[in-house]
Amino acid sequence: MTTYVLTVNCHSTRGIVAAIANYLADSGCNLTDSNQYDDLLTGQFFMRVTFVSQTGATLDSLKAGFEPVAQEFDMEWAIHDAEKKVKVLLMVSNFGHCLNDLLYRWRIGALPVEIVGVVSNHMTYQKVVVNHDIPFHHIKVTKENKPEAEAHLLDVVEESGAELVVLARYMQILSDKLCQKMSGKIINIHHSFLPSFKGANPYKQAYERGVKLIGATSHYVTADLDEGPIIEQETVRITHAQSPEDYVSLGRDVEALVLARAIHAHVQHRVFINGNKTVVFPASPGGYTSERMG
Image (cartoon, rainbow, N blue to C red; front, side, top):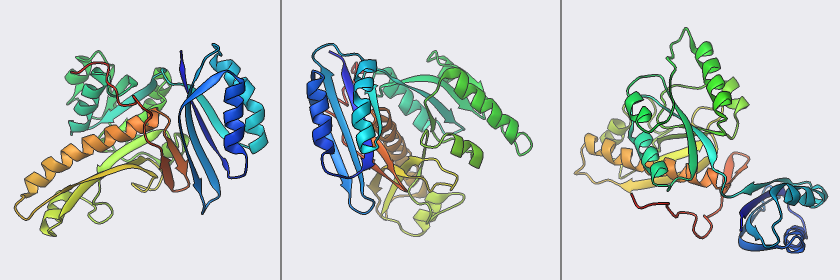
């Protein structure tokens, strides 16, 4: 039986859950997992449901049948085939820890995505990418050619069918126009020192201040640099005995972990943008299962 994912966002009011449950039951579907959240400050309701059709209902018929329910509550909604992998385009510069981590997770099936290409403004990881039978696109970026470079990037996005762009330590600032065009479809990773430690050598700045916790933040990209809705964060403890180089190494590991978690949540339709924040529901049972061990 095919597993489907229903996501719903609307104004909170009485009867939403009952209407969804009744529709699925009447359509011959069985709920396998359900999460919901009422934001009392904004009055918004969020829900994610996984279910299977026990009567062989198709995705198109389920969508058509749900339309009256959605109209009644003025919902933003979608029904996804849980087995369909999201097409992802990765972008990287000269730091490869996140890229290599994502490629490994993808290879063993721990990251349920279809990587349709890797874009870089350097040639550093061309061989690594090509060896994975993934298209590599070198788009050099300078102050003079940035508009042309972004136009080239958009061509790659459209030609590859990418549904999500991941900045896996891509060290170029995207234009406001591009950020707006792909709102909610670009994920970035950065060290959690921002905005406390901006600029060059943030780990050195943290070392000099005697920071006891370092970490990483993954968020959606917006026109406001590093201010987009946060999807995932993690920290690691530091002692006085660690060197600046230790900070970098520990930070590298946590960055890779946080980015992978954020992508995992997005492609499983567990993330809802809620103004400047996000609602992130936990994974369904079996959601972290890998296709193979290594």
